[in-house]
Image (cartoon, rainbow, N blue to C red; front, side):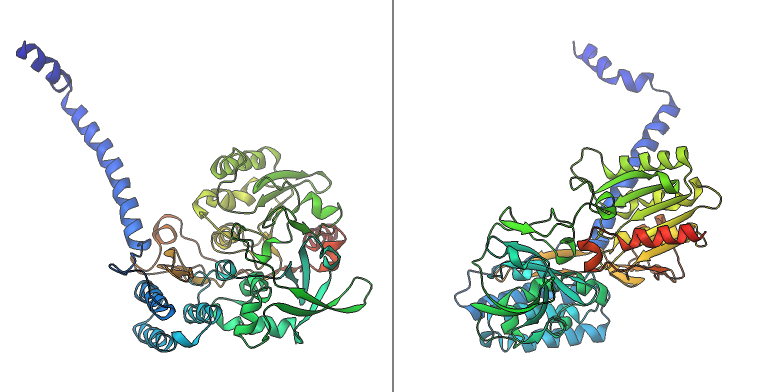
Amino acid sequence: MFKTIGRAITFPFRKTPWWGYLAILAVLGWFGRNILLIGATILAFHPVPVPPLFQGEPESITEARLQDLEHFDHVRRRERSLTDAARIEFRAGMDALGARVDTLTDAEFILELARLQATIDNGHSNGSATRMVEGFGRLPIRAAWFGDELRILRALDGYEDLLGTRILTFNGQSAQSTAQAFRTAFGGNDALFRSFNPVLLETPVFLEAVGFTENTATTTLTIERANGDIDTVALPTQPIAADASRVYSGDLAQPWYRESVAWIAFEPPAGRSAQTFLARPDNSYWIDTIPEQDGLYISLRQNLDDESGESLSEFTERAIATLAENRPRIVIVDQRFNGGGDFTRTAELMRVLANHMDENGRVYLLVSGNTFSAGIVNLAFAEEAAPDRTYLVGEPIGDRLQFWAEGWAFSLPNSGFRARFSTGFYDLQNGCEGVFICHWGSLHIMPVLVEDLDIDIPAPMTFEAYASGRDPAMEGILAVEASR
């Protein structure tokens, strides 16, 4: 009996030829290599910050804030862009803040944490503006910048007459100077800052924190209506909406983005814009034809899967096949709302855009201050592949060509401040050196270099164009194509 069982167990080993063992070892080695590579990448570029051990429940606000600072120290220790001198300076800033935590309001403490983060001066290494305000009452409006105009695009019931109006002042301070008061709390370029700073302007305790009000119950706005009339309105601070989703100001140009059903959106009429960047609210990516220009329009609102049932990887395969089949004269890739994700999912598509076109074809990349992170790497792939046939259209992008990304975001245990550190360097202009400095995706797997990502066809989205259903970027492309 035991002999029979033994023969059954050893049968595969007795019948497998020597080369079969080599094949098995090769397969195991291949899987093992990938497992090791994934594990090494996580350890090298995505270290998880562990909260300080043995911290009990704080017995005072002072103790709670000191606990938060201890956890916040992960930023100083793990942010790889910091030099030794900058790390010492960062620690000094933490110590200085720790010495006066009992003199600050909650909003002031959070703002000081954001200012410490901002000394890194890196777009990815910022505190989250939407997380900063979620624990406080806000005004019954939501606004976004169109050039130098701050326009109200959302309102609660009872305040819908404010939709579309321009905010001139907050408590007597101009909208521009009010926004600028928060500039030191965020690193990175101005285009990125403009995409989210209105969330702080709409939160009275933060206006108080920068000295622009002493009354957080009511905020006085000077507004300009569509007919040119100037009005003054006093807006009460609304109770905290604990279940509200986090919506960046930069997303408000898409009417379907709302914190809850209670919010009423300003909606432009149907027009060229409704056929392009305002189309398909349930999809983050799609492809459509532009028959009159023998063109294809590709929308990439994010570099992550949406809920359409088609993964982003499947979509890019379909888009490449559509390009190859149609060989269009122009291809428009719209990334004006692409805040990032995984650039490896779209790299192949961006690199072959010009390969599947008419020989005189052009690639137009639509961009804005919301175009960030993986969205910017996408631009670089397309620009590098066909620099003489690729044109950036719109407004300046949301980051520089040298930036730090990857890393980790984590919430402090008491204040809820969303801190972040970055660990992987990207230099899209000069290349990168250093195995544990440059992210392995950009250094070894998909390297990319471009001269610049400057705007070739300026086409800022004005409120006048938005409100009338027009898209200046599409109009700019059509004008260039007509002149060709």
